[in-house]
Image (cartoon, rainbow, N blue to C red; front, side):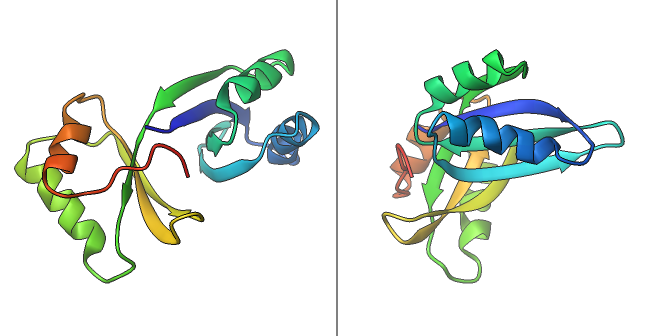
Length: 136
């Protein structure tokens, strides 16, 4: 399963650039980046090519961050594909903490990136024929 970095960033001009500059200086490639905001701060979620090195660089730059495992589920680029994945998880009574869509450049397919705290989710989806990416 891919590792995702989550960090807090102030909701101000240049904050995202400061984060990407740290990663660029460390020669870290960003595969996926998602931001959520509130009035004062935002949560930035990243999947990068070398997560441990990225965490070290970000912490050195003063960012509070953590590393979480996420599921990366391949899905066809067709209407209803995400609905089928969500139905399977719902039928299996597996809770989703959050979800976003990304793209696997190597496989040339969309990816549903799913954060769940339920350890059986990966085996459950594999058992229903879904392909889970280790990296993308």
